[in-house]
Length: 305
Image 1 (spheres, one colour):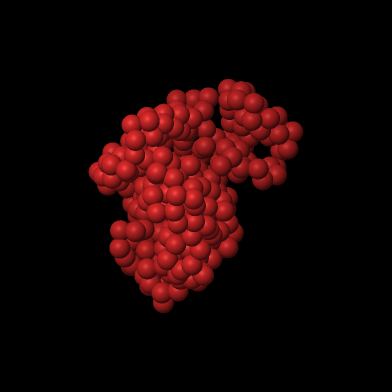
Image 2: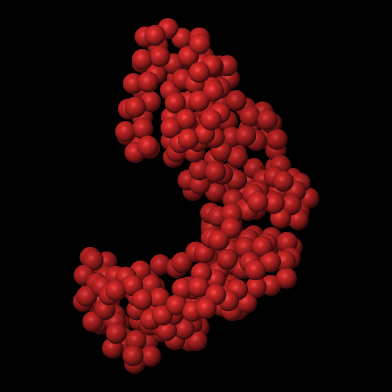
């Protein structure tokens, strides 16, 4: 597998909302948690957890994991995740797997991580399905098996897990472990892009720009480059610079080109600086000053350095 697959991602489940055995105190604790009164949530959930309530055990694990109402304590988080996981709580199983993979509260153990991911994934937990797919893709805790990776990514992607959608897009785009299929890549990139994934938006734009998997469409490419650029994706910002110089899918605008090159260059890459210098050679001093002003305002608005 090429380095296009992001390594080390471990999805952590959010607060459990399953109906607990003891609804009254549990719901009071949940309300306290949601308003940020973690001390009250902890006080109400702890006795339930100690009595064996699996949802309360999981939520106690979350609080220790994230340091909410208590000092962050991964070993204590593992303790409560394990209790809930042994009772079949899929969120807890997934999080326990993440703790083993990250060496948080337990010695690092990829095989143990896979064991718990699988338990949660087989219950339909999308985060665990993604994590299990990533384990197969990277050969961590299991023999590397791209077909298994695709299988679990697809399960997670169909549930809307954005990173699984993105990685399926990458695999079809590059022909990694699946036949290269740009139309299929577009399908999965679009799902992730519509959920706001900036890299998926960039990759979808590239496919539109090059007419791969979709009819070539400069205006549609600009649309997706812009969405990614607005999120700080430097490659999209850089590409928008050249798009405005050449007037592809937009009206030619050298000031806009300089502005986007400047915004991209602020992230430290050399290529946008070269693009900015190229644009500056075609501009008047007033145009350069206007582009610089626009870039400063854009970066201040978007809190980009």
